[in-house]
Image 1 (spheres, rainbow, N blue to C red):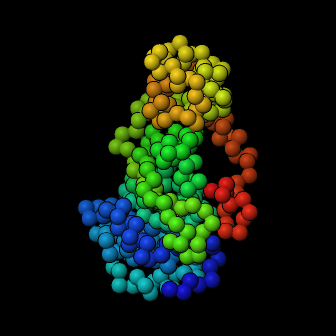
Image 2 (image 1 turned 90 degrees about the horizontal axis):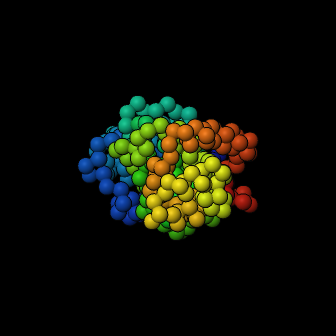
Image 3 (image 1 turned 180 degrees about the vertical axis):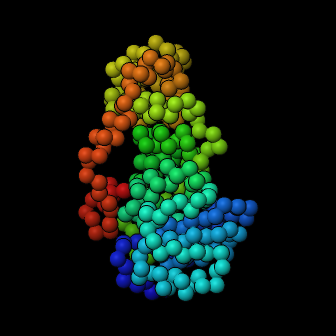
Length: 291
């Protein structure tokens, strides 16, 4: 179909690719949760969902230029609700839900922040820029760990399901695109005070370069407590650790040591507020880092 002039930059997944890729990885036969499509665009994913899902599909599309064609295409899809609003500014739908979407790349960080902090969000199949997936999911998708990935990994299971080619989209993107899955764990891996774990992770990343054993306060403490069979962990940088490694090292900490590093996460967040945020468009010269 002809794509109208857009006010927001988007790359649309072709209809045949939607059927081929989502049909392989997104199984909805026994699915009971309503599904949210963020950035429905021309309706290729929404249309596929309406045919393969038994539940309500909420299709969010911000760009008013796309709404008339979207409404016409889905006028006979009774289970689809088109919401011509920005998903980021829309209240939660008020019940547990799943997301299947090719999310607007320029809003990746904001969308993922909203989803992963919404207790109603249970599962997602998201088409995102590869660099964003690596930053958010770390070693779960074969990349280096990050503060965000280490914290998220205690709450969500994640994986990279598929790598797309540029020819799968209209217009063709100049970045690598992947399909990721996110599933909220039945029970978080941290059963105690999540703030303590956040402080632990933030402190390690801020104080442990080039190796964890060099971190003030924590380095020597962990060296005294660690099992000798796992002492090599302390010779790594935090970015080289798995979620299981972080959880093990955290389990060695007592209340006294955690008190000494309290406030580390809040300090990191505060420092981050002073950093100017950038969002990628297809015209930006440094688009790969703007996610």
